[in-house]
Image 1: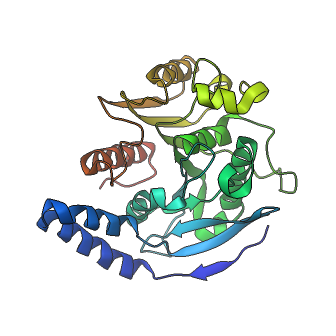
Image 2 (image 1 turned 90 degrees about the vertical axis):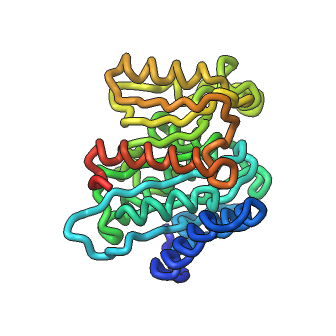
Amino acid sequence: MSCQFINLPGNQFCRIVHVFVMVLVMSVPALAEQEARNLLQRHLPDKLIIFKSTPQGDLKLHVFLPENEKPDKPRSAIIFFFGGGWNSGMPSQFYPHCRYLAGRGMVAFSAEYRVKNKHKTTPVECIEDGKSAVRWVREHAVQWNIDLNRIAVGGWSAGGHVAASTSLISGLDAKQENGKIRSTPDAMFLFNPVLDTTLTGWKAGQKRLGDRSRELSPIHYINDQTPATVIFQGTADIYLPYENVERFQKIMRQHHNRCEVFSYAGRPHGFFKPSVNKEDYLDTVSKMDTFLVSLGWLSKP
């Protein structure tokens, strides 16, 4: 796999921007607050790295690095996958989360993957690219001083499906990659995720996947090795049944796996984004942080 670095403004610049934006958010009137939020969302990653070349074009990891680039021991890492129904979406959806977690000492990545509108591909390629991203991070863990046993994935909606599929669905790895390096994560953070692509889940997904809907349905592959999982779900999500989340947690517990579900009453699909609800964004990030601390991946804040 090819590897290319594109240097962008570093942590010092981003910290200055972050402080500036937070001052704006706390001090400006309501009409200007949205502009401040937009600025926060436009945090630039520290690097862009090509992790995979495909017939439809190169795919990049958007990398956010901790301030201490030479820590005493390996760090934990997380890879986020954007939402967009396998049709569209941008890695910038998770820039705020990446910048926050980098500030806490993690190496954070927001991954590109092929989507229908841009690449004319199917959800199968989405899963393949997700697995490629996890494998690339494992393959280059020494370069980033990452602990091989502390690599998480996260994702929203269809990106949550990609994240869950990297852990639960086997057999969709890219053939040219080193199969000896595993493409599964060690923890999952899922936001309004697509967990069931059969008729009992997201019906639009079932229609899109057709005969492969059962094959590509993460909930049907939970086993004793499924990693610890956190799910953030709004009860007013009109696309994804809340029952799917409850059933996922029930099956996880039957297999003695850790699975925490945080329910947000009356919240819609995508409720956690800072541009949608700043308070819910802060609350979900706080709960994600607490879970990482409980795993021993982060020190107490």
